[in-house]
Length: 198
Image 1: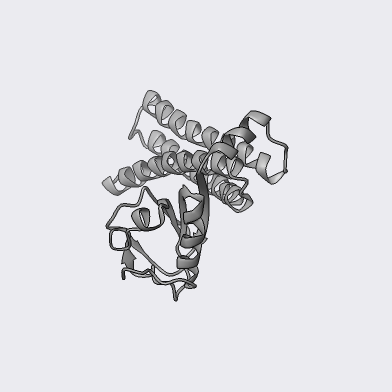
Image 2: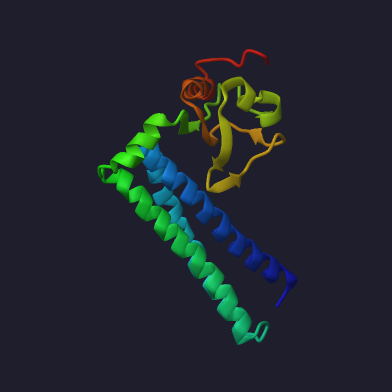
């Protein structure tokens, strides 16, 4: 089997791991901050994880068939992929609580009321002042208090974006921070407000 095959398989396994971890963050955030749109994102990601799971299974079994790996190696890889899918399924179940409007336990409600942190999802308009600038240039965390933890760009996800990550029109930003910073980020992303220091 070619080296390209090895890279593809490794990338797929890492993709399952990264996306399933992101799903857990999104699922709990949708529940704690009562955000249906974020819960719906979890459902979309779960479908994508299912597709990745099937593709990865085929690649692993093909490597086994071609004697590129032995049975023990194949079992380890299959367990890794299965674990990622199980995490994704659990995240979907958490998000389902939000989508079904199930009443939260009073302890969870109390923790939400006492929290100053919100989790939000915003789409960047083409006339937004955020477009084509890096997070480092924008200084969103210091200016609005909102910290971007992930970006969805079409079907691609960027996890833990850094100061060199550029924001493009149509990007969907997932951010958390103080409640008063959420509206400012939404206004900036929609183009209703311009970044003051740019």
